[in-house]
Image 1 (cartoon, protein in one colour):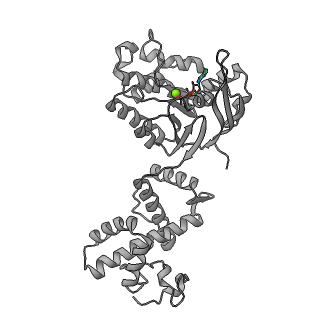
Image 2: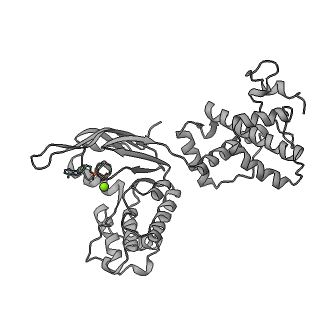
Image 3: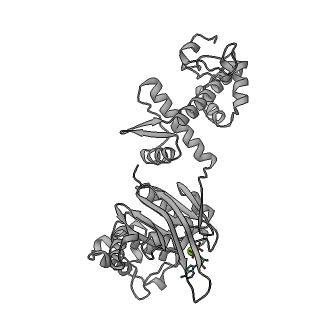
Length: 376
Ligand code: ADP
Ligand code: MG
């Protein structure tokens, strides 16, 4: 797969005033896909700004290469870099960097000017997009910090850049303005924009699809998913499982198309799903995780109906949805054994067998065909 952005062994040394050289980046390698939102995190001085400046064509690496789209930006001359930046990259800074004697509208139009030509109507539309229609003719000094940052976001967006790079965009904002800006960025990401966001703020980091941790100029890549995210992955796996099982369109998806697209992209990256043409399919790891979620869900349904005599379908379903995420493998096998290894859920769908279901040969998995006739 060709990634939208590829940084390979990027290093940056600063030689400041005759002192010892500072290695701000040390062989940083990572990729970003189109539509992805990556948070670059790490303590102060770890090289985040240096990395973002290189990706944003404001600086060049001492060694290594950076490709964005089909362009190797480490090979561009200074003039070519300026052009490439104007056409491809949208930049957002902690300090907003608005021109003080230009209005909000003129600040946005200035970015158009550097790109090609100005288009006032388009610039106004961008301000409307960030909720600042009424502030178009105000100077930066007449705007709050949150409003100034939204002008800077409008400016970053106005040329429809392929990638948006933001360096601590919420670093100077109070909590409520931070939330406004994060909501705005989330909305833009949902439209399919690619984001690299430098932050040391946990809240901002949590909005991202993936986090890259920098320490002393080196990457310690961490893929951290919350319990909610893992539950979403399970739901997607279940939907796909049921789709394959019934060969029918599964109508009651929990997710919007946009959420699904984002989940599928994340799950492909972490090896749960793969694309076969335009179709989504399980990887081996994804299939095995789906099998065990479905197994936990259907065993829980049996438990609630057969043992606890809950007859309300909605109550059974919602409880099973909770239990499927929290049952350990041991408890699942105990429930299965207690229930006599049922072959189907109360609605007749097969329960994938577990380790406990092998007859006489512990640990041996039986095929779903041979489990059909099991005692129910
Ligand atoms: P962060 O954004 O994570 O706080 P920076 O990328 O700004 O980190 O800085 C990484 C390291 O490089 C720091 O040790 C910093 O002092 C050093 N550094 C950054 N810019 C320069 C520069 N222009 N000249 C010399 N050293 C620099
Ligand atoms: Mg910084």
